[in-house]
Length: 358
Image 1 (cartoon, one colour):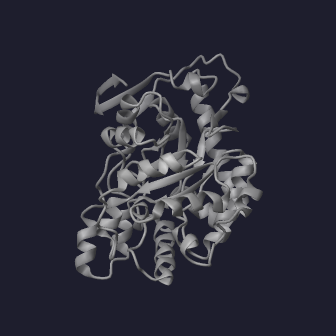
Image 2 (cartoon, one colour):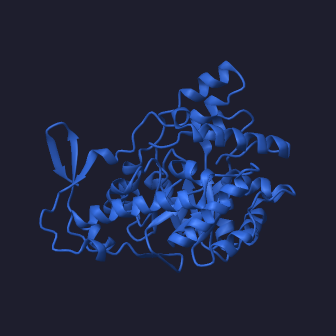
């Protein structure tokens, strides 16, 4: 999630994170006006799969660890006190499901005495799955490299996510406006870090050109985090302090590169780089489409937040449904595993009545 301006008081950070949670929990206030683009694709149905549905494998490997399904619980919480319970539920569910988990921004936890559950207790609750630390790119410019390295140590993470949120910062009251030197700082971090660096957008998408620059700087994994899910411009519009600020932010609620478009472009540009697809992925069918378009892992955040507030069991149930949907999509495309799904025939409907192979 986004970050506040330099010098802002810690309680302001926490108040802002609470605002973010409240708004995202009410998706009517946070959804982007644009679409992910995944609806524009459909699989060619296989009426003779010659497969045992229950034997279909969704297993994959990420950051040196085996996963039972290609899912990442994406970053969704930061400094709010109630994030402690949310993070506990997510970590326990990730361990039970054997899927990856990324925490929200650790800036507040690193800069104050309040850790809000972002400690090595997460590793104790999820000892066998990838855990990804998280810090904002804007914090790297002024001594933030060491802060980023501490973020990894704080939770004994397998990798570090640096999130790019220039649009959110631009429309946020007091946001970080000066982004000069971020790429150089990322390159410095990649050289100094002993763990892989993951870079993601927060819902406006990564272009192929930006992804290429990131990989050349030493970034190991890209999360396209495209438009079509939560719009942080819409979120900031909801919490804007003045009507003027609200008008500026709300104009950008449909800004960004749709998830499917970003995924296809980045995969074509970087054929061997691990890619995560997030940004409005609603269910296992969307996940299957994203995998067929080039994703290695599927990230979800806002769509699982209500479950995360409720209990560990609710999170487990959410992803079990996702996994079964994905398994049936494999079955009905004649795909016995994820490698076969990547070869399944996907067609794109550009206009009504006009269909072409993807």
